Image (cartoon, rainbow, N blue to C red; front, side):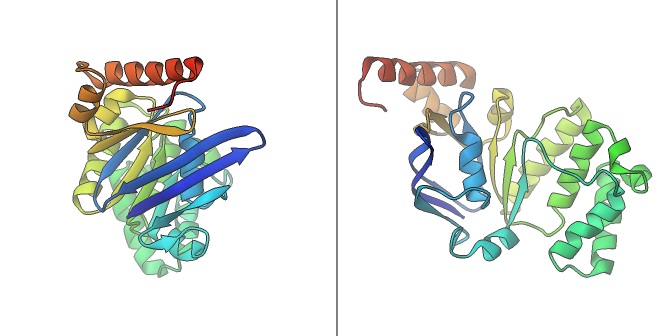
Length: 251
């Protein structure tokens, strides 16, 4: 469902994404990890069509993101790390607005609103102004709206920022259920315990390059038998930095 071939992105002299090749099959929950500035968010913005790559290409569900942007956008859902909401709309109005963007019948949208708002605990807030909602409630609204058009591929940048434990459990269970139903999910996170809990495979990027790829056990072996993802991550990224400092070829 996600096919990335020789992807590069430069911002002036900064090479944010370097020669990225990656395939993510249908129904896989894939976590992209890396230090700050490693290129995770840049990669995700390219995949959802917010940035143009300097070179290379990416396909979502067989559609080229540059040549068929509308076909791609109908397939995907995207939750950035800092979502934008219209503060003077109510959650109900915003939900209907998203439905209109995808040309969904209004009665279908209202039925989905009742079901989804009940699931996310938003029913009592559907007529309040969005600006009056807490951060956690705004995040719940973003998830509710993202699932409205039944996307087949989800891109989520830092999915648990500012959420309470109840909502974290709700989101984790929902993502696992979506993956079991065949939805392909790519998420970035600095919460390594989340990746340990939900990821089918993990990719680690450093300085724009994919330096490691595999399951938890495969990454542990790659890192010399480390006990958990945190130790594997720290070992592999430290080795990459050491390689760069010494001018040696990168992994």
